[in-house]
Amino acid sequence: MIVCIAVVGHQNNPLYIQSFTEADDALKLHHIVHCSLDVVDERVNNPKKSAPTLNETFLGLLYPTENYKVYGYLTNTKVKFIMVTTDLDVRDADVRNFFRRFHAAYVDAVSNPFHVPGKKITSRTFAERVSTIVKSFGLNSAG
Amino acid sequence: MKQYINVLDRPLSKGKQEVSLSGFAFLFSELVQYNQTQVDNIAELERRLEDAGYAVGARILELLCHREKGNRRETRLLGILSFMHSTVWKALFGKVADSLEKGTEHEDEYMISEKELLLNRFISIPKDMGAFNCGAFVAGIVRGVLDNAGFPAVVSAHFVPVEGQQRPRTTILIKFAEEVLQREARLG
Image (cartoon, rainbow over all chains, first blue to last red; front, side, top):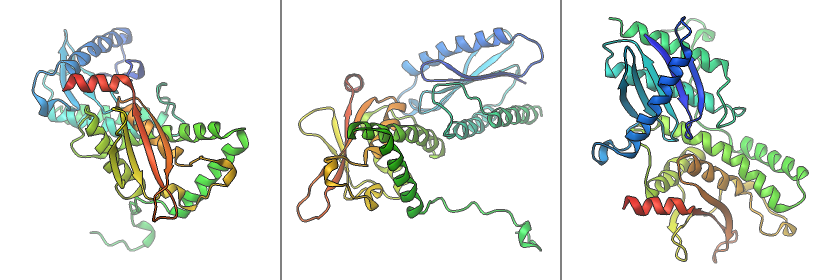
């Protein structure tokens, strides 16, 4: 079950944060997202592996906390997508698929001529598409 | 393939990935004319066209990086330049740029040249506008792509007369910022 997704710009400014739980621990989730940004920066600046995996977009599991897992994805323009989930056994392929669809929705939102780069994403269509993607993620990996 | 009884029931085709040249030329000429009424001098007009191009550049970078298979992030100077020269040009103008050269005088200058920019095909500059080039729009696109990919640069468009040809060749001059060269030197 995905509890929170976030889009963070290249200067670590938040562009879009959305949580999907009824409980109002939104602040805690924001804090977790914020901490995971440090891990992203660390991965980008000190690559563990050699050149071939240097420019990968999918960063994988950033860090597991108490009952959450945080996944990261980096685009060419240093825009980061962070995903927080409570599922214990998530398949790698599912997460990659999720980020691929999320990236497509993000590109469509940014192509809007009225969107100012660097400001928050205010498109309702983007919010709806993201909710659809999040819901279908839960269904696919439930089996 | 299902056979649809009624032609109205058939799904819409994806459509061609192209725009008509005349439609674009008309739109661009309106853009230039609108900006001309708003400014007093040429430098300002060039700056406005560049800013318009910057917005396009930012978006096209996101779009192309998402659509390209492999989706690798460019960290090297040559990498981003060849990406610009082939992929971006192909997506915008349907062909790769004519040439990519390294400047001889300064370390940080690179040039992309075209025999004739698609943009300028239906434009003729009046004599009293001097060295103004509507290629400033393309310079803005290039600057948008480079800036958002992490390579800040100053980009400008120039006419370079070539003997044997009536119309001068257009060159996009890219001058990278200090930090880009330092980073490149560090990466070895």
